Image 1 (cartoon, rainbow, N blue to C red):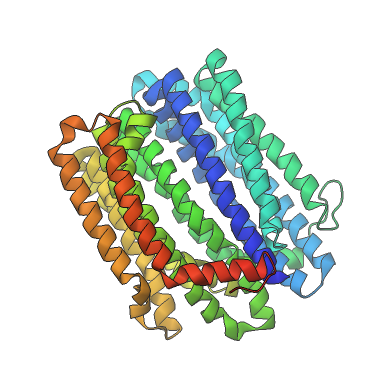
Image 2: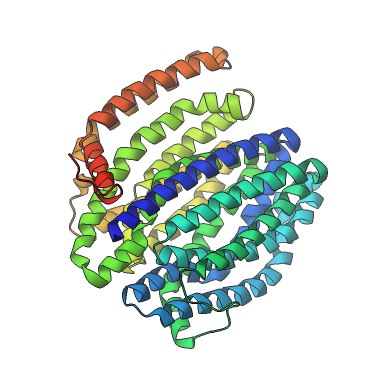
Length: 500
């Protein structure tokens, strides 16, 4: 039953990403047509800058997954309830305090990175971004608790409904209020999510109507584990704001807008596989309490499956960029495509660390996760300034790509060394031919697109290239031994029938 629930969680995580990806595609296309790319850049910058205040969470949301799973496995329901209430109350008060202090500081930062003509609008929507952020960080505890109870499927359903609600609200409010309508929609969306998440969580955990129990002992336990999470939060929360601030300074707001679109698109595709891996955190936390000897086997299977999926996925995204630009933006946008290619390289190398990252979280060893995040953050700031001054906005994106790739490699390399897993396993034998074919296909396509750039405003050539490449990729996916393993796993644990 546990394996079946893990599989269901993974499937719902993938469905969630597909649904949210479609919603984001429609939303950004709508926003480009109504408020334009520059105002989209302003909203992106405001959200990114205000999100820095998420450092207030002290890693409590991440701790909630670990300790809810732990006390559920130990059948200590009172402690499960105590962890959730303690984390939620702590988050609510700490976040409110820090947001009040951060507000004037971020207003000052805006005067340094936002063009003067856009500054009043950015400051006007900032309070709404802060209010939405408060609901987001507290709701994060509720959703983490659902993950800890291994009900990722419920959390995924909530996120899908929330994304659709935001889209509907934007359709209603943006034509009337412009960029302010985006802010209004965001507040209403997260408020709804806050209330519904708590109500649904009460179905799986015995909780009061309103959280009131704050347990000092439990707080020390989850905060102690959360210190590493907090360091990760502090560094990761600065990634997006630093990159976008440097893009605004060395590039322009339009470039920030295109970066936002490319980044969100790639991360949605990436999340198709990473979100499925994320269900390993409560599963591995449970294994640690019951059968810890199985953890490395679970890691290797997870990594091999991830590699099997992301090589063709990221290759197809690169091949599709001209067509995506034509459909999403309305024309072949060279800046969008260049940024997209750079981000795909960085996020591909980052995605390889997902199984190791989540395995570390599940067993409660976060040291190398912390080191990896700190490395990314420090490199991004240093290289961002250096390459931004030298190569303008594109240099900033190159700096982020290098930082993301190098910092992420620390996590999966350390896991293999620490657990005596040969480094050659990072390039699974069964997938080597597939990756060679994808690389050749990508290089050939990029050369063709560069030489024939003048005709790539038309959708037909791009569609033909994508179709041909997809056929080749499909053949490799079908012949790959991982396909049979995946089908067998689904048949056995989801459909509960014997695999052939």
